Image 1: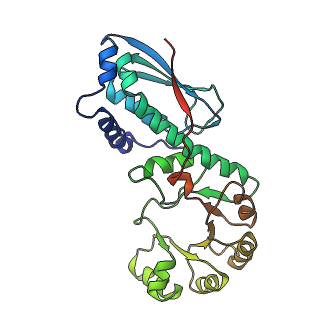
Image 2 (image 1 turned 90 degrees about the horizontal axis):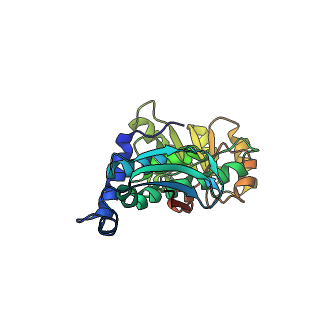
Length: 281
C-alpha cells in the first residue's frame, strides 16, 4: 500500500492545527506544563479495527514541535484489538498535548474508514467482488479517505469528475437516452478515458451492451436481477453494484457475480475508531 506524499497531507493537517490553535495557541497546556517538560505517550486502540492515518498523526505532532518523535508499532492496514499500542510519541510535553486532538481526529476517522471497509471486504471474501469507495467524501479529505479505503482492503473508484466518465441517470435523461449520451462522450473525451454507465434495469443494460462501454453501474438492483445482469454482460465490461449496501446485504450482492460493490457510507458516514492517548511517563 503506497503512503500518501507529505505534500498532499500537510495542507490538511496544517489547516486542522490552525483551526484548533486559533489566535493564541494552547492556553491550557502552556499555563500548566513547563516549557522544558518531556513525556512519552501511547496511541492505544479501545476496540477492534484496522489502522489508517498514522502519517497524519505523526505530522500533526511534528508541525507543532519538530523535536517530537513517533515510533509506529502497528502500521496502517494492520488489525488491532482493544489495548493494542499503535504508536508511541516522545518529546516536549507541551507539543504532545497540543497536537493530541488533531492527531487523534485524523487517526480515529481514517481508521474508522479502514475498519468499515475491512468489514465489507471480509464479508465478501469468498466471492470475486471487491469493495470500492465513491465520491461521497468529506470535502477536502477525499485523498485521505480513499487512502484509508485501500488500507482496509478496498479499491478506489474515480477520484474526481476529471479522471473518468460516469454517465448517470440524469445525464441519460437530459441527453435523451444511453446511446446518445455514450456517443457524445466518445466525441468529447480522449481515447484513454474509461467510460462507465449507470443503468437501473435490463432494458437499459441491453441498450448499453449494443453501444458498448468499459463498465456498467447496476444501481439498486436485487441480487436476482444482478445475477441476470451479470449473465447478460458476460464479461464484456466490468460490473459494479451500488445502492444501500450493508455488510449483510453485500453478501448476496457479491454472490450475484459482480466485480465491484461501491459503498458511499464508507467515507461519508464512517464511524470513528475509538483510539485513546495514554500517558506513559
